[in-house]
Image 1 (tube, rainbow, N blue to C red):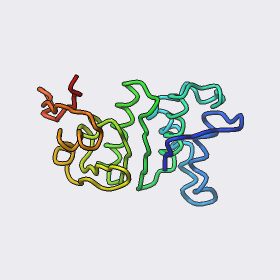
Image 2 (tube, rainbow, N blue to C red):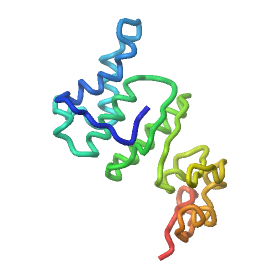
Image 3 (tube, rainbow, N blue to C red):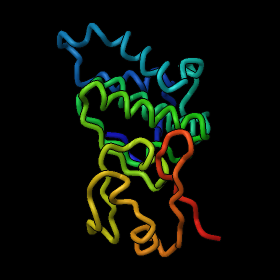
Length: 175
């Protein structure tokens, strides 16, 4: 599980924090994969060059990628990700969403909480729109994220345009 806020209070290095994701497998046959899985998680999140840096010395976006790498290193079949793209630049946002999509395609159950409606439209198989903790709609992203529902929930009129290449809806605020 990746929480929205991930604080590291001690002077752990990036590699040490990512390796903590392997702790459940200590003294089991799965421990043999620790080094490979840690390296793969560092590479997937583009933080391999930071592996020896103290986590407390990193930017917010770099810390977020360390937290995701720790989760990926766990190598489990269920990923719960709460705002995994917050504090990330555009490239790393897309990387995180591709990682989540690829894990789902490989058979993992992946649940993401996102406020980026365009990310939900582009990457989700299913979507649930909430308002004040209550379910407004559940279904495919195109079924759930309509202009009317978005305006009702967020209080912001929008247009939903069709991307000319992908055919996926794009939410654009009316200004």
